[in-house]
Length: 288
Image (cartoon, rainbow, N blue to C red; front, side, top):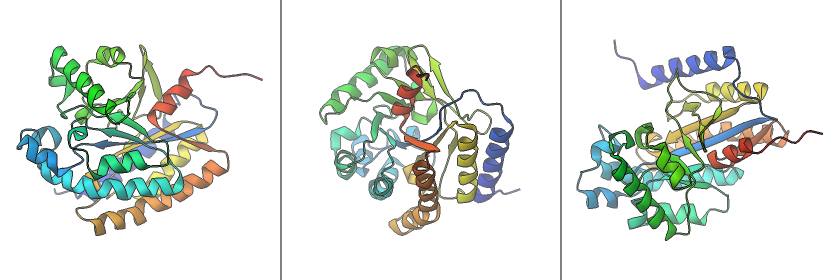
């Protein structure tokens, strides 16, 4: 039986709502947090040309790297501008190799007046679970060197394909936090300390077929229980052209961000990046 993406999303979102409604909270905050992170898998079609297709399957099993980079190049500025309008920061996990070619995406990230958390998404987007220790360290070293050219020292790591490995190396390169692996069963509203690192658990992944009312229900659960809601996405999942992306922004992002902004102004919610959320959790609470 064929199941459409929209139908799959509804089932997944209902599962998340039931899970968070019934599950006993694993932490308690002074007020709810909204955390938004996203993966910049390519960022420029130039990388597809440079890599000659060698990284295609590391990025996507069905789309080539050139196509993903092309879509991201016009989608990222549109979505970043939308979040900037509301003054809402995000964690933007940049593939290190993008620093080799630069371009519009890097320009947008650096020009934003909002204090976004520019993190790392690997250097070549190879899965860390398939890398030897030396290979993983080489990726982290190259990330540090290239991002430094832009004045960026990443402290947040989002593993390519969400395949978590080599946490000891993240500690060595002084990362603060990472996003763990999640799905409808493993997703959480929870930040967990792992050694000297913090796993800012993903709560739900969204795309152009996500339903605004379902996502709002998840935010309300987080607000009611004073928990972190960590939404994440891929930029290439919101439409194949500017018109489609603009439609998704109006349908999905605008009503959600408008609602979240009201809750923040009412003192029920804070806007955090992965890094700022981890730093807040790390601080001891003051008691009156």
